[in-house]
Image 1 (cartoon, rainbow, N blue to C red):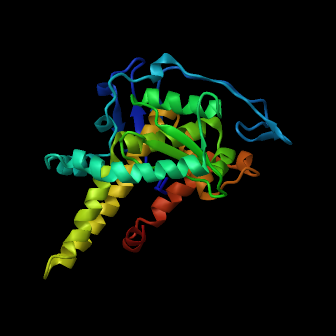
Image 2 (cartoon, helix red, strand yellow):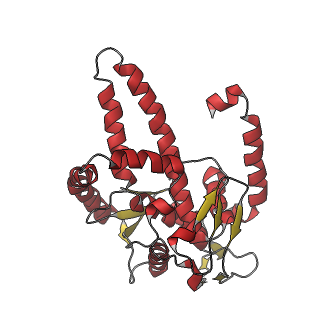
Amino acid sequence: MASVSLSSLSLAHTRRPDAAALTFSSSDLRFRSGSVGFGLAKKNQRVFGLAKKNQRVRVSVCRASSLFIRNLDADDFRHPLDKQNTLILRAIPGLNELGKVLLGSVTEQIMLLENIGTSVLVSKNQLSELHQLMTEAAQILNMEAPDLYVRQSPVPNAYTLAISGQKPFVVVHTSLVELLTRKELQAVLAHELGHLKCDHGVWLTFANFLTLGAYTVPGIGWLIARNLEEQLFRWLRSAELTCDRAALLVAQDPKVVISVLMKLAGGSPSIADQLNVDAFLEQARSYDRASSSSVGLYIR
C-alpha cells in the first residue's frame, strides 16, 4: 500500500446495482447504501486485537445481498487519470498480453516460491477467517480470489505483484493483522485486489520502461523523460486512489478506509482504541489549507 492523501470521494449505488449505477464524485465524504449488518464486539473489545490478555475476539460479518455489484468492471471505478493513461497504453495492440507474458512468467514464479517458503498460505483450513474476508471481497469486486499469504514482519504492510497471471497473490504482514479490525483488514485486501483487477503491474511497468527509454534519446531526451516521470508519479497516485475506491466498494463505509490510513500513519495495537477518525479528518483538512500556497503545492 502506498501512502495517499485523503482526497474526498463520494459513492452512491442502488440496492441491487449494476455496474452502471456506480457514481464517484470529488466532494465531501458521503456514503449511501442499502442495509449492512456487522457483528459487534463487546464494549472496549477490539476485533483482531486483544480484548483481554491473550484472548482473541471472534466476530462474524453478515453481508447484505445489496453489496454484490453485478458486472462490475475495473473501469467502473478507475480514477479519471488512471483511466486516461490506461486507455493510451491499451491502444497499443498486444501490449497487455505481452506484458503479462514478460512480467508474469518468471517474476510470478519467483515470488510464488518465495511466499511458499517464507509465509503462511491462507485457506479454508488455515486462518479461515482471513480466507473468508478475501473471498467475500473478491466476490464484491467481481473477480476470482487470489492466493493470500501472511508473512512475519514488524512493518504493517500489504502488497501484490498486481499481474493477473496464473498465480496472482496478495501478502499481508502479521503486524498489519494485529493493527487493524476485521473490516479495516478487508478494506486493505480490497485495495490490493483493486491493483490486480486494474492490471496496474502491467500498465505502470510499461510506463516506467517508456520513461527510462526516453533518457536514451539524444538531445532533448532528458526533458521528455523528466516530463514522463512527473506524469508517471501522478499516475501512481491516481492508481492508489483507484484502489481506495475498490476498498470503499467493499467496506461500504468511508470511515473504515480513513481509519486504515490513520493507523498506517501513526497507529499501534496499544493505542488503536484511542484514535479518532473525525480528528484525523480535520487534520487532513488543515493539511489541505496549509498546502494551498504555491510552496505548499510544490512540496505536496
